[in-house]
Structures are given as C-alpha cells and as structure tokens.
Image (tube, rainbow, N blue to C red):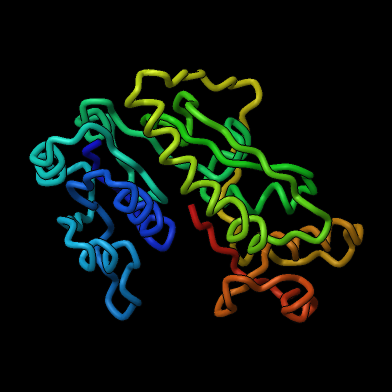
Length: 253
C-alpha cells in the first residue's frame, strides 16, 4: 500500500520502520517542526535516514499542508502519536481516509494522558484503540482494540514501553490491512461509556498524604518514569519513594 505517516517521537519512527520493513511505500512523513534547543524528533530523523519525503508544518489546517498531502496521492494515512489537530479536510484526503492510534480502550480515557489515568485510578486492565479520527477528541469509530492487564506493580513505563508501544505498532499495520482489504468493521463509540481525562502534570501528580495508601501507591505508579529518568524506570528499580514529589508524567501516544 502507499501511505503517509503523521506523527512524532519514537512511536512514530517505529511505525514508519514497521511499514517500510514489510515493503509498503511511505510516500511522505508529516511531523511537527523542531523546537529550538530540543533534541531532534526521532520520526524526523528516521524519515531522513530512510529517504522518505518529510514535511514539517506548524499546522495541518493550512492550504500548504492540505496541498502537500494531496500531492502524495496515498491510499491511507497513518496517525501515530499525533498532538497536532488534524481537521476532517486533511484526514479525508487519502483514498481510504486515515486511522489513528490511542493508548486506551476507547471510549474510556479519552485525552492526552490516557496511559497514566487507568493506573492512577487503580484499574486492572487497559489497552489500545485504532480508530477513525474525527473533529472530536478521540471520538471516531473504532476499527481495532487490544487489551492488556495492569498488574499491581506495573508503572506508566512498564505498561507503555513493554506492552502498549509494541502492541500499538503491530496494531497499526493490522488495522491498515483490514481497511485496505475492505474487512474493517467500524464501531461507533458508546457515548454513555465515554470518559475524558486531561493532562497528568505536576499539579495532578502532587501527593495528598491523607489519602489511602493504595491511592498514593497508584498515583506514584502512574507517574513513573519521572522527567530525566530512563524509559524503563520502574517502581522497584528507580528508588520508588524518590519520585513521590510531583513527577511530570509523559503522554507518549
């Protein structure tokens, strides 16, 4: 198939590699412009290393972004960890539309920190969803879902990097095949079951020591790794209680 990838960071790069390695044509990659002083975006670097045409628009709503995607003449758009708003006019350009990854079992935990909150709330399961993007936040029809348990000692890092990340890359190629073969079943999300959670940042990560010990424990698990720590930091290996003071949790979609 001939595709365009819209995304950023290591997840976006891994999705790019997965499609290229199995022989698909990636006609172009769209990722956000580099920030001054920040490390190069892995997806940008990956596209350049593999000779894929690269576009870096500050907004996907501009005539330039729309024109760039039209010029690629792709079958399908793959949205892998997208923080930019992609309007319907943009997502409708590929012949078979676009599909998007979200690391929760939609319609539950819509929003940017959807990996953190199930752990913080004490849930025993989570998962990922591949869905059709719409103008609503994580509200489009569901194509594919995968589930994974949340163990009592799991952290944000272990749930995402060990499971939701690799599962998500595989699910993107699986969902793309379903769409291209005409076998995809699009299920409308049940709004009565929907929930939204905002960012999990310093204020949300602040511990109230008057809470039950289970709530405190779950909050810390849902905020590890902390800033500046390695991606595979866990509660046991990182010095668990060192992170009890307001870590900022990433939202790596």
